[in-house]
Amino acid sequence: MDTDRRDPPDGELVQRMSDGDVAALEELYSRYARAVYSFAVRIVGDGLVAEEILQEAFTRAWQQSGRFELARGSFASWLLSITHNLAIDELRKRQRRPQRASTVDITDVLRGEVDVSADVEEAAEMSELRARIRAAMNQLPTPQQRVIELAYFEGLTQREISATLNEPLGTVKTRMRLAMQKLKDFLGTEEGMRR
Amino acid sequence: MLEDDTHIGELVAPYVLGALEPDEVERVEIHLIDCVECQALVEAERRVADLLPFLAEPVPVPARARRNLLNRFRTPAPQSLADAVDTRSRVITLVTRLGWVAAMTAAVFALFLGWNSTRMQDQVSKKNSEINVLTQNQQTIAQFVSSPNGFVTSLENTGVASGAQGGVILNPTRNAALLVVEGLPKPPTGHSYVVWMVRGNDHVNAGVLPVDNQGRGTLYITMPEALASFDGILVTEETGAQVSNPSGTHMLAAHVGN
Image 1 (spheres, rainbow over the protein chains, first blue to last red):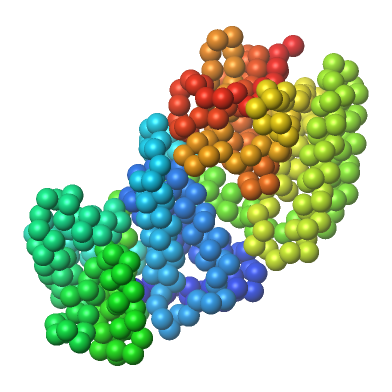
Image 2 (image 1 turned 45 degrees about the vertical axis):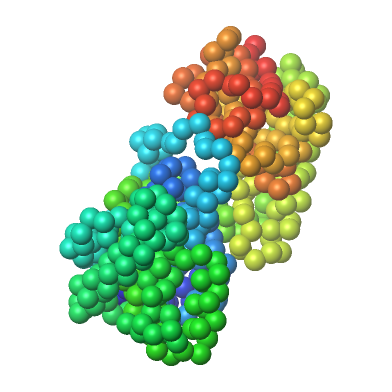
């Protein structure tokens, strides 16, 4: 994922963050808070929980910034991977305990103030990535889209997906493999796939 | 795609999507240790998976999330301890001037400020990764108590959590309040402490009181209605954060009317 074309580059900001520079953290927050928050909302469906995940993701990025290696992937991928783990963990915790009385309407969360700078600073590349992955997903047959969504956004294993959809496990495995192959083919030749 | 039994081709897609069972994950990760071909496959599919977060519909970020995050990392100013002492003096002066506030109130806030000072001493010596909500609270307290109309009151323990204590600072001018507690056990999984503004038999949900592992918590309360129109504050343990009426255990309560 190429999201490191801005000045200063993400890698430099991560380095500064590992040296304790809070301004670098804030710059990275301005760049990626919206992507992280939107992703967390998509998974947990709860604005307040997503807000906690947003803060925890950046806290972990701060704490682990000394171990981040740009050569192994972009900061955005790393941060969103942290977010994914946190959000799926939260979903699984909920499956083991009673559900909350109700989820929070996102409009309640946003009734007060919106972080305008997080919107403004979001890179144009992020919008491009959004458009590209959506276009790629739209190429897939609906059943293939569904297994990707159930696995990635709902944290289900292939067996759980099979049970949820009441489809044979082999069918789920095939759909998942074909879906990822098609996405890779669709996206693989595009410039944006480079890191 | 590597399909034969000596590789893990079939498992790569579910692996990067997190859709394997634990035993399958173990099998994949053992195989990846020394299979360069499968490492490359995983890397290629992970690049696709890295783009999936962008399928989420963009949502505006609440501004408070930035403030809360940055407050975790900002080092307290060196003069914080002096400020704390000064704030303590101002609280006591205010308490004396108001007259009607019980001595218990001063004790609660002296305890809070002492705790606050100790925490800040620790934070100064630690790396910036420690949560620094207290500095904000201290500044908030200073702003609150400097208001000629502000007042403080203690939270009464209902006896459920024997060590719990706390207080509330109200500032009618800003129509805001700061609730501070300590000694409150973390709620059981799936439960939350909810703060209610009470007016007669009516209860208005003022928010969830976050409590850390040391049993400490603070909540900044703002309401669309005048805080002065309420006559009490109640903290209950509820099974959900968004309940509209208290149905759980009453933990702490305060009278805030005249």
